[in-house]
Amino acid sequence: MSLENAIGYAKQRKAFGKVIADFGLVREKLANMAVGIYTGEALVYRTVGMMDVALSEVDKAAADAAKETRKAIEEYAVECSIIKVWGSEMVDFVVDETVQIYGGYGFVEEYPAERAYRDARINRIFEGTNEINRLIITGFLLKRAMSGQLALMPAIKKLMDEVLSGPSVGDDLEGPLADERKLVMSAKKLGLFVAGAATQKYMQAIQDQQEVMGAIADMVIETYAMESAVLRAQKIAERNGEAAASLPIAMTRVYLSQAMEKIEAAAKKVIAAVADGDMLRTQLAILRRLAKHEPFNTIELRQQIAQTVIERGKYTLA
Image (cartoon, rainbow, N blue to C red; front, top):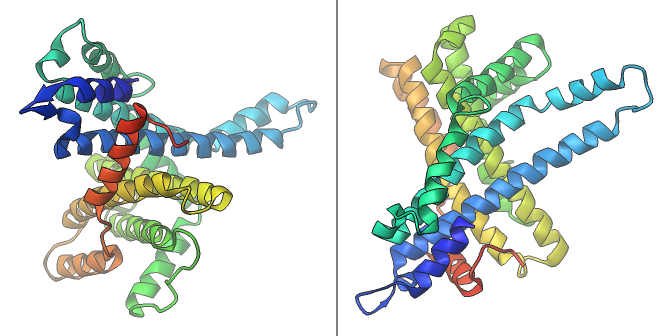
């Protein structure tokens, strides 16, 4: 609704002789808002789908059905925390950009931007603050890794062996969204590399390093969102063809570009905290190698997205 309000206002508000929906920076805002909604849907659809599959495998007639149902749901505690953090912050972004598009009227109660902006703020506090949920995300993953439920340590070792052996020729992917899937793979490798460096530095005491835990959580959150967006675009392309999936593919590419910037920033933050001197320089070189990719033309992609949502007056993929 906030995006629809922002589009409607931008199409009728005039400045310097034309509607502000024609201004590049306003169109950029509208595109980023649509990208956030698309990715948020992808996160929720993917997670709920996995939970539905898990719950369908529970024998409802069994004596311990309630216990097994709770167990099935608890398996997705990390994903639910990710959605809570990511979703609440995405909503904040959308309503904030709506206020910006409305300008001074964004603070006037008679206009819809003010109410949405005021109501959205609580989401980052209730159901566990976003800070607590970030600690839950990293803490759960490390706990599962230590107990052997999650093969995190073997994955880190495999990555380090790959790094030490030099560039691999087997990383090229083929098929629909190959570049996008490769970028997700790079994000996962960055997360493994940083988690490995942090756990090697702090061991069990990493639980006391909340800033490091939070930065790793940010990497996990963005990687899960990236993969969810790619999987959704891939399914749409497989079902309707790549030409018909041009809008979700454009949104996915924009989101991946934004997410990789956040992941690289979080990775540098952790690496700078766990290493110094020659070790720091070595690890930064590894980080740059793992993060290397050709950028998408996000200006053109955002223009495409903005034009579509402005013409339709709302967010829609149809």
